[in-house]
Length: 184
Length: 184
DNA sequence: TCAGAGTCTGACCGATCGGTCAGGTAGTGT
DNA sequence: ACACTACCTGACCGATCGGTCAGACTCTGA
Image (cartoon, rainbow over all chains, first blue to last red; front, side, top):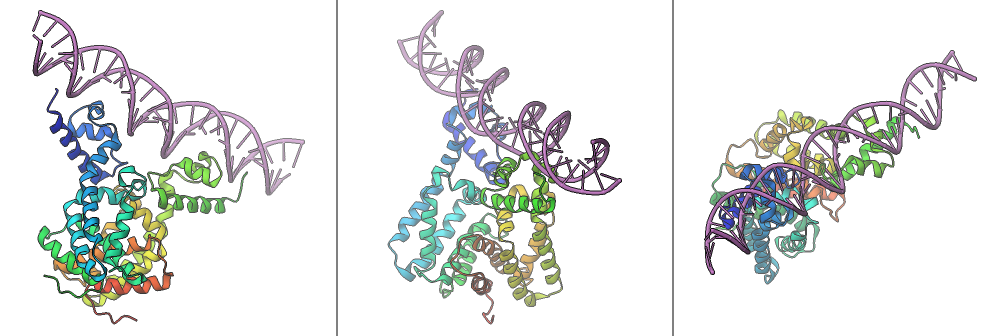
């Protein structure tokens, strides 16, 4: 065969992310990916150092985007953080649905994964922003609800187009967080 | 050894539910359970027909409770369903945290499991109640958010005692659903 | 024309999985 | 004392997992 290497790699990533999202990381074998791609299992392992490496490369853009969101929110104090946090989080999850779903399904095993070592810390800080930096339990619980609800909605089938889904999510999240609804 | 059979069974269920909740169903082997219980893998399979049977028995009470909640909500129309649905759902998840976590982590693989065949249908109806029976997209998205957020909060470590967590969850859920906060 | 690099395969490896089985052990009724 | 039953074990099974490896094929530049 000997096809274009870079294109083959992205095809592997595509297929793997689709299978990981539907059957989970553990539930998808290299054999499954190879069958779908139309090559041997050994060919996958020629292009990638292992199953882990496929996952890492697949999640890399999402991990990067999360770090960027984190950096953007870092400078905002108190209430000023809430709206940008809600918007940024909704946009992030909408954009990386598939990766989030993979992450979401396999949290317990995944958190030990090296590629995600910084995710809990980032999530904690995002929660802090969503809670308006309040140390009180109630806003923090509400923030935790938003943190969980947004990915769940985005990875579920919805009849809404993304733009409208985004508006609804942001409005509802702000309600959950008990913020006034002065949002465009 | 030859210990008390019924007590041994419940001990196996206890250990298995703890391990399933922390490491996932697929991530927990019969060997792991046997080691924790302090018996051989074969002993587990003497008391249970297989790994599946352990999971089924473990989830049975939660599945039953979900069916009861479903029946209780079935008769309520429109807005009258919202508050009982929120309360019932919060109570259900609080009570069966561990089982919900097991379910929650492994949704893709689990939904094919025979013991959970009726769960999606029940979830859909619960969502319908949470949305106040509205066919509109916005209340349904908000209901989906609540549906996902409550288990996530209940299976996360929180500093709040259950009674207060329950109050906060119900209040926040009602806000998400855009209902007035006339709740005790 | 030929050497070498890049790509890919089938066969194979050790580990681990869920599950089976023959047989040993301990308690119980007679 | 004996047989019977319930309980439990270590050894083992086939399947599947992620991963390795020697070699074959193809393309390219000299």
